[in-house]
Image (cartoon, rainbow, N blue to C red; front, side, top):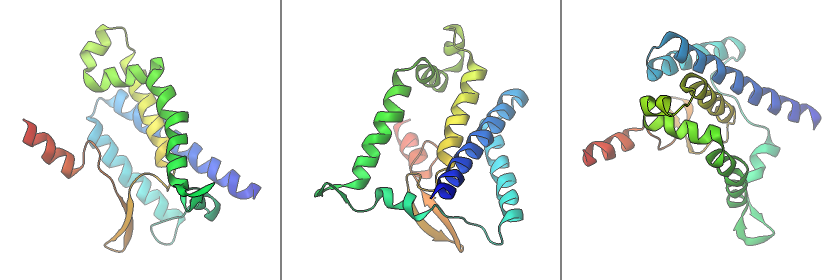
Length: 171
């Protein structure tokens, strides 16, 4: 319904605003990214508890159904189609854009990116905005599990324990 679409758009817009705020805090205060990100996670969790009776939330059923079942044929999972669309609509254009290249450069070496003419503060904020957009989706990559009565996503990212162990093994 129109109400569900409006709510979904509102949550995604809120994710963008939160990303903008967090990225701006990182750039302006020059506090390490991980400290600001964790601190803001606690702030937003507290804000959510002021609105909700219990931690959590849910995506509308129509949104969840986008990645369940098959598409056109039983041999083509709908989740694969959604992933391909995500790659085609987000990753490919971002990877080929000036912003995407700037994010890659800043993530690799901030000093080299700055010397190459990249506006490092603006690029860092843009990366947080994009992250905020994706954080607005409950259907972010990862397997939902219950831990201490809370629904959490298990993901493997740069800061995950598995990635850190793998990285240490390479050093």
